[in-house]
Image 1: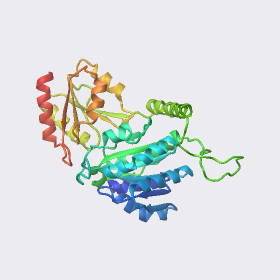
Image 2: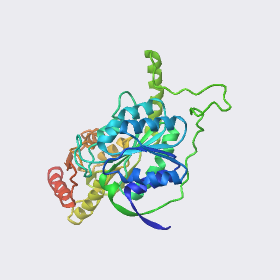
Image 3: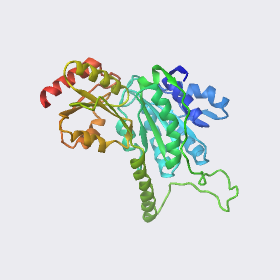
Image 4: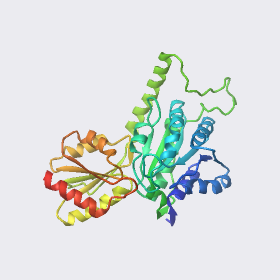
Length: 355
């Protein structure tokens, strides 16, 4: 297969076009500006629509309108911009509208820095908008995976009629790596008979709203949405295990830090510490069950969570391990990236305590 060098954000944009995205609405913010820039040129060439909206709020509500008509629609932003989109994402989930939201994370809180970070984990995995809803959250660790997951995100969104978040740190958005454009086998998806795209051959108009005035109707709707949440939990959970067959110390990391953790684990093995890496690919649904199984292994002595934050995924690791084994943490924040030697030292210190 032919390998091509692509920049992360541009590869994500091209992957969306190849997945059938026909409407992109966005607003510029570093470090994801290459996504709307690429879309502004290539979306019209593919027969689609590009609009630079007047704000992040406007962009996500344009996605709402396009998704309601049945076309594949997407928006992208970075941390504070995604915060502004949260109301719209809640509306998308409530109205059962498929859409893809890309967040190329930067340092925060507030405006923060323009450097890569992972401080949006809580926002993405817990749902930053109001009400009972969840979004599938996909976390690539390299450009190839960013391309593959972007294309799959549209299928997942259509299958469950639900927004899907691609959560990438700023380094993945800005780095360049070789990728392969793979032949994809798309999912078998239901027809969009719900779409508000004209009456056609129906004897009624489709009406899409999230406003349910009386409590019984609203509860029934929420329970219906929850059935879908359970299906997504059952079918979409995924992860990667690296050097875990005989590992005694398990590093848990996602995105760029998982690559740092893998190099650290390889180095630690040469120093006599059997380290391995557990990498969640879906941050929601989180692979609790598999991580709990690993924690139950007698040979596993402890865990170290590595993040570009002050320990947000740490909560989920603790929930999974459930005090079966010690869980330690090492993280950098505000745009600082954990170094390999730093992670090695953190594992060495943790190993002294748990072995």
